[in-house]
Image (cartoon, rainbow, N blue to C red; front, side, top):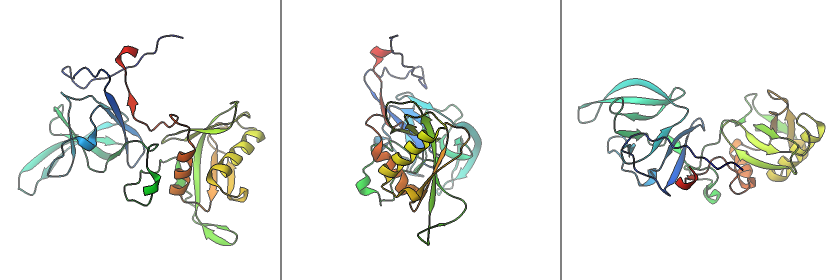
Length: 259
């Protein structure tokens, strides 16, 4: 096998040597997109008194942005009467971070804008308002409530990315775009559809009548509809079924000897 390679992007030439440092991967709370990789643990980062934003010193920490774009300059009036300039960084049309100068030393991450790992969430606290956001690939049907046994109920759609001709059926990864699932049958075949339904039935603990496989953009990207479960309930059960280390939403460790 060829040697393993890892690429690191530093935000400053004066950024320190990471060695065995742990990197944290952060995702947008609203879109589920991966937006930031850093060796700064935001739970221990200093916070601004004005808006509660987390402060990352990019001369002391790695701070690599992903799926973001530069937004407009915003001029804000603080409670003290002073004016503050913010050069905002966007995910789609939503701001999640800013700098006080275009290429300023400090990167400020807005309060409640990012989340870390979905995979290591303590689901015993699932009723907490701090529960991780459901990725966009799991959403409630826009068509309104359907009926189950004559009772109106919610229908949830799950976008699936099939890894076909696998040794066995199982959930592999959860990302913002799709839930990746391994099946033995070929994508688009009746066998693959049957495996998909059986896997969802076992993991979600539903009846077969609550599930259906629908056509997606391609044979490898079908959609599973789940009647009688909210998107939060579906997401929680799928995360429980992910094998250790398989979830895409986990912190990373970098070993420089592998570079």
